[in-house]
Amino acid sequence: MQELMQFIQTTGFMNIELGNIIMMAAGLLFVFLGISKEFEPLLLVPIGFGMIVGNIPGVSAQGLGVETEGSVLSYLYFGVSKGIYPSLIFLGVGAMTDFSALIANPRLILLGAAAQFGIFATFMGSILLGFNILEAASIGIIGGADGPTSIFLASKMAPHLLGSIALAAYSYMALVPVLQPPIMRLLTTKKERVIRMKALRVVSKKEKIFFPIVAFIVTSFIAPGSAILLAMLFLGNLLKESGVTDRLAGSAKTVLIDVVTVLIGLTVGAKTTADVFLTPATIKIFILGAASFCVATAAGVIFAKILNLFSKNKINPLVGAAGVSAVPASARVVQTVGQQYDRANYLLMHAMAPNVSGVVGSAVAAGVLLGIFGS
Image 1 (cartoon, one colour):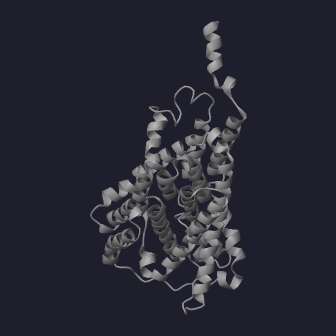
Image 2 (tube, helix red, strand yellow; image 1 turned 120 degrees about the vertical axis):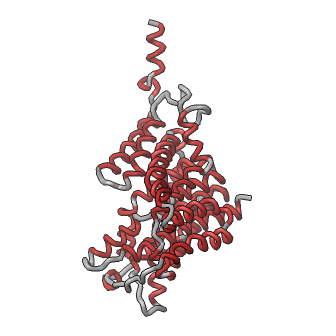
Image 3 (cartoon, one colour; image 1 turned 135 degrees about the horizontal axis):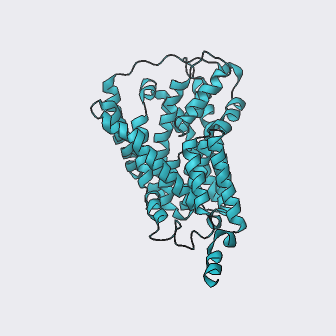
């Protein structure tokens, strides 16, 4: 009987708290949104399940939690805390990315750059809400809607906020189809939404091969702090475009990125335990994240409208919304919204240019912040 009572005392039923219930419910909501609503299921399903795992009562007490040295979750989380997983994800993203639209119409780079305004606006907002410089810099990257970059910078500058920042970044990446369309419609007229852009020129194979090499050198000179992320991104793209490393490119964009996505989702979710997540700081981070994502989307759209004032070849302002780093979700949203007003208007390839530019831009912004405040 004594052993039985001791066993009962170790069960989750005897140790459950309100915080556990709230966080497990949040995890179930993420899983529901991923499966039922198909909001970025590759992200939300593992993150949501990880939240359930990390908040099972008694897991930490049994030495199995993320924070427990030597546990399986702790070893898996090592890839997050040291920036390993984000780098590997960038390798896979590079192997999947086609920079042709960006090479064919370089001025669309400016839309990706304009969207990074959300990062620096969030940085200032974080300081006003009481975060210190390092924390504010890490929170700011959420404005780029780039989960891997957010994790990479937070692991260097604000590891105690890593779980909250990562969860906020991935949550807003998944909610791109919900958050962006209202902002896009608010800032554009019906006439602007039906603008048909000039067909992109055909990009040669040589251009595609030289681009990742030249782009890496230039961007790394600008922001050495982001050299690792940029190196993995452009190496993945070079593997894809060279034509002689198809097997490596294929592995990077399928098996490797899939495995890493599962691990990063599970461990980030498991990190968001009630005692860490249910705090005023986390609430502020989510508010800032939502605001920054809206600002980034608006900045891209508005800058496209400004460019149209000085250009004969008009840009559909909807394309500016793709300047955030959520690839290819933002580009798909642009295509969907555009076709609601003109079924024959195909904006996807045009939108991919600022979309991939946003990935590079957020990585460069992270390197700039790391260079200024990380030393």
